[in-house]
Amino acid sequence: MLTKPVLSVVETTKILDAARAEAEKNKWAVTIAVVDDGGHLLSLLRLDGCAPVGAHIAPEKARTAALGRRESKAYEDMINNGRTAFLSAPLAGVLEGGVPVIVDGQVVGAVGVSGVKADQDALVAKAGAAALNA
Figure 1 (cartoon, rainbow, N blue to C red):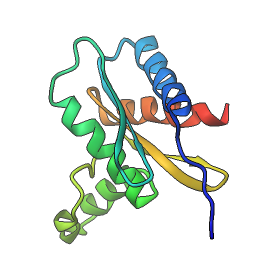
Figure 2: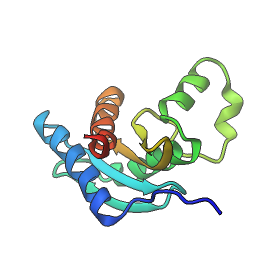
Figure 3: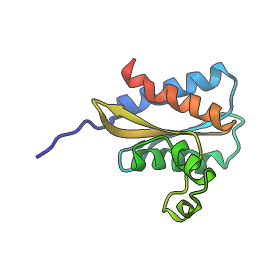
């Protein structure tokens, strides 16, 4: 039998807090979602001023990163580089801003962010994902 690390409320809160600090430092109104390795939502925070649609997009970006075990930007890049057949994949968050959370070489979840420019969403998500390795 294999064993694996899993995110608890403690780790999820640490990820959310780090991502929130990065967003607030830059005065970015975003939604931050944290999911487990199966893409199931563990926590969601919509900062003041973020459009309501962020609460739908951020979890999907996180889900895509968790299930694909890579940043959601990789899928966006595939599509933009001509692999349009990937649009039929059963993932709704194929936009930049989803980042896997890796512990001991294993994907244990992901962070998804929505609300500002794509690279800014990714920066906030990466700050959250890096919180467990700090």
